[in-house]
Image 1 (cartoon, one colour):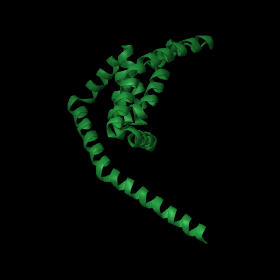
Image 2 (cartoon, one colour):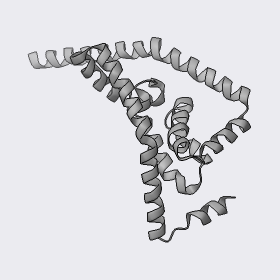
Image 3 (tube, helix red, strand yellow):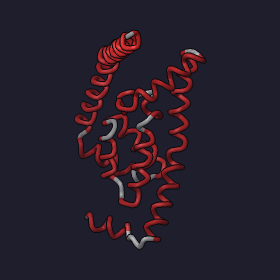
Image 4 (spheres, helix red, strand yellow):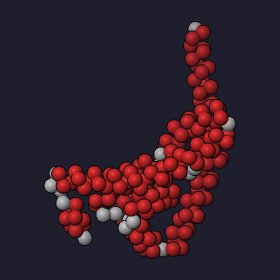
Length: 186
């Protein structure tokens, strides 16, 4: 009987802690995210969607911008999984690398500074962060967040370049003409 009472108490404590975490997000994170998304939506509306699309297409011409600026901007503005939609601005040969970078950055690299980017994975980041804070203090947690973001920012273009080359190699090996696919879209 003591086991059942202990299990029920533990379950009740779990739900209470989950409720407190949820309420903390409702009162802290949700208003911040709503304001950020509203402001970003207003900026896009003021600039105009056509101009925004033009800038996004120009970003795809440069390796650094294609695999760093565009996915980070997409993740910040529309969050995961909608950020993958920004791949529409890319040629077919760049899409696998963009998808990888976009997927890679919407986890801890962006989430550690901008929690709205991937709320579904926030618990993973917060678990790591809480462990670091417990051992090294709040300053260590802040350093971890900034270091994670900067490391991903520095490696994104390199990873994108490697995947771009792998895509070209595999397409050639499998007799897939990526240029023909691109031409057929237009």
